Image (tube, rainbow, N blue to C red; front, side, top):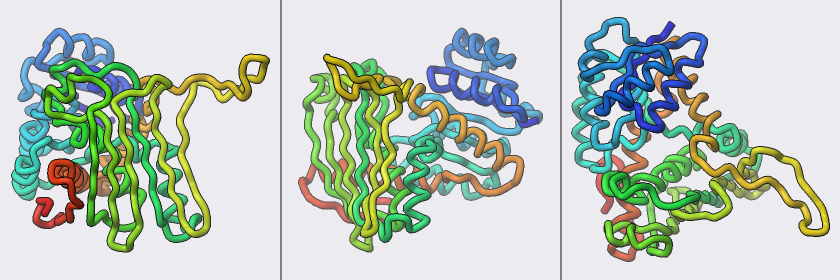
Length: 339
């Protein structure tokens, strides 16, 4: 039985705790949050103990792993403290919104022999993974064009969350940068991005954007187009399309039901798209946790590494630089900066 400590029991941490507790070979031992009431509620839900301090979790030798779902600006500290305690780590994305802090964390982690898996859950979505698998199997020939659509429904998050999240590219598009790297057959080497404020004045007030298009080129010449919006009125719009000389493969949006209705008022009417990211990606989150537990059980390296998180952030920084300077930006992964 693999015993987990949950660090951060907000909306996503509570979901993670519930999914861990549902696994036949895992249990939640501790739940920690800066809000003790929230930690206690999640602990009660999964039969764990609420922790008053992070050290309560990390000092417990019976804890086999930690799942970090706290605010982004705490990730680096908690990763390093957990690694120093010898605890394998599953950490929500991003590692941090500051690339310099990510570099410092990477260097500091080198002395610890613990696995660190990054929470890019969309890699584990059955539909998106199906696109990846089809490309790797050569079903569409050489990949020439990858199109990623990622649009969020509903109003913007609370201002406090927006102030801390690092902006659209670091917080939201980072999933798409990782998905691009997951599907593409070689690394992006050049990025060009354009962005606007079309959704809500709060984003401009925070020096952020809410609508963006990113184009990336790989060394082989394959192109990737990412389009983002902070608003849809028809549900959570998440699609990945890979095109090659021999065909096309695409992941589609999900609905509660696949029933199609025809009547005098509508033709081929269907259920609306799922509206919430936890609802849309529940299977992916569970598969992500299952994969991490399998890493613990078998000793194999994590499927999504710290380096994957680092490279996704490098692409996000390049997109930001491209918007600021209105030019294509060349990627230098080894130097950890865009030039």
